[in-house]
Image (tube, rainbow, N blue to C red; front, side):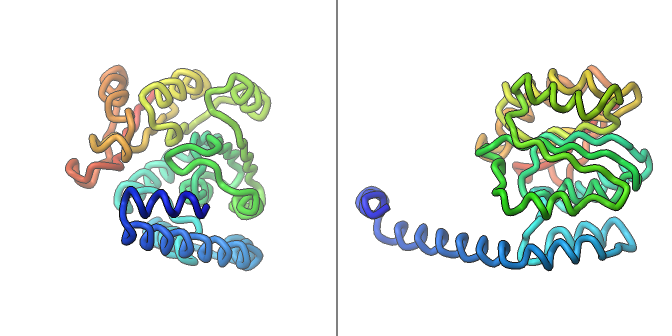
Length: 252
């Protein structure tokens, strides 16, 4: 670590070294705080009620310094959740767990007996690789008669598909949310591997369809542009100039 600090100071300057050190310490302190409050967080999650989708989303964005903050644009995720509230999908498959924010939100707008499956790409660039200490919290999202399955594996691995098929046990997916590997090849692979599991009349949503820098959206906008006209589709975008975010929905 000392050698890395010397390298940063030499190549990028002492100010950058100080800033990165500050950010690292801040991150570690925040993580330690979150770990300590997990028992309280689980109790709160199991007991809180919401009067509206807007109230639900604001809670997820602001609660406990971003413990489960979704990587979403507020207005966009609200509109998606309202669609899900109307369609009532009983089987949900999410590619990309990240902070657990969208998994939590989905659990609160789908039926009380729904099954939710969330797959995380360990160590991914776009939020993958959540730590073990978050697992009990994510499982606590489930309402008393819901089932939540957390799969910590590469979504592109055929064994991951087999695991999901075992959980489904012949059922079809009503809602597929693709927000994992953002590379063009990655999002295409997720679509091609998991879209056959979606029921006729089901929906598939992609996050980060708005064109922007590679580090923000990867190859998702390119793939979305290729795929959207093959199906009835809807785009939920607050601002096409925001350079990230945007949710694209196709209706199967």
